[in-house]
Image 1 (cartoon, rainbow, N blue to C red):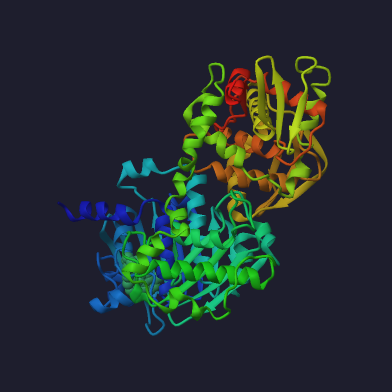
Image 2: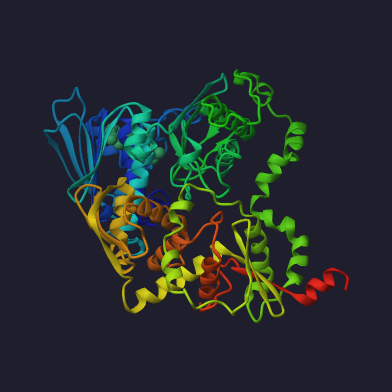
Length: 623
Ligand SMILES: Nc1ncnc2c1ncn2[C@@H]1O[C@H](COP(=O)(O)OP(=O)(O)OP(=O)(O)O)[C@@H](O)[C@H]1O
Ligand SMILES: [Mg+2]
């Protein structure tokens, strides 16, 4: 096999998209000891990705060598491999980049008179010459995948690729607050992060909303240290967005450790919400294996359970210390060294006993939780059979149980959101009531019971309203946009760079749905108008929340952008559990629900109501 083809194949592992190249180049700059790192991209990295650093630079020989596969200056002996302190260690990144792009390298060491310029393309050096250059390194890669059209075609839209780039940039920037970072895209500076403290960096990157809402986590032991910040419970969001784990300064993804943090928040946040965290675990590199995955985002710990216990205890400790939850039910010895898990490493017996604890089971069976109730459900399912609908199917039956158990959504928004959409819904239904004489009763400010000729139905008010709004928006945007009310005082909103990109991407769809949003300089937008149902003065909140919800759905690739937006809006504007409804409001809602094309389920597939037949009820009473 020709070398360049082999290189292209190998490159595919490390460089999957522009963002992967960004990550590798930024990490190299960090490893080079830079105090200033600038990232410049054009066309979401498809045309250009350039990283300029003021680090140590390379000699002429090193510059030539660095594009060779397995050329790394970071590992000399096999022993080093077990004590990795640098971000890089494989010597693969630049070789991979050179295999799939046109690369220009400029570099100079402090002690050298001149610097070196190298042009390489398709793994072949095209040009090499001495040049005058500042100390440090600049690597520009142009036309990524120019020689692998299949991969190039596979890239997503600029907006989507740019989001990946911003994600990688943020991960590196968060890990190194002592380094200045900037990000310029299409000649516009998106981020400018002055060197500072960890807290300052978090606020710069994740937004000032977290100001005064961060709780410091810090515990040191002989085995490992943990530091960083977690968000106060009230900052928990509907998406996982702001959750970061770093092990020895390397961003990692770990469902296991995430669970440790989530469990520390137990009882403090709603079940389906996610707290912000940015946590740094430092431990002896000898007990972590970062060489599990080409992108190094998955790692293996020698003893995961110790880390789990440690993370959980440290976060609980921090939350308790700041007396966020005075009733918090645990007593943690301030000296975390006393933790049995830290003191006595796991033996096989301990491992099996730990595996039988409810905590461990709860984790491993997380995704099967609803099966536990299956038996009970059979009974539920038998109870109702909806006329020709899927509501009676096993699948949605299972969901319905979850639905019933859903905790009351008691967030700060529910009162504010009550009027959204609901008043207009009401207005339309002043006189168009459900069959006259039907008594409607609200239960727990969450469900509506309505008698039917053959029994009764139990309606989930939020689910029903979600369906109603969903269909209204779907129909409205098909031929004509939702009507907009122009704001008397246009509101400017400032977003995080990542959200600003997202708004840009969604602009057209948002317009269709009644939002008038125009860009107004760096990360700032002017809201000129909102859908007629959205109360004025609430724009920033509505948009923040909408983006939040959109991200919640965005892992679902099967939906179009518009579908995701409409689902988000429907969820957002729906009356929440915990909202008390008048008789008139209930009638309006029930009426509207049964005007829908698919009244029996939410857009997400949960049932909106359950039907109970008289005969079934009688049977249950042994008649
Ligand atoms: N910005 C830079 N400044 C100074 N030297 C650099 C820079 N980027 C790369 N190098 C040198 O080039 C070598 C190869 O870089 P490359 O990223 O391919 O491998 P690595 O960082 O050693 O390992 P990995 O493949 O895990 O990233 C590095 O070991 C380093 O010596
Ligand atoms: Mg590297």
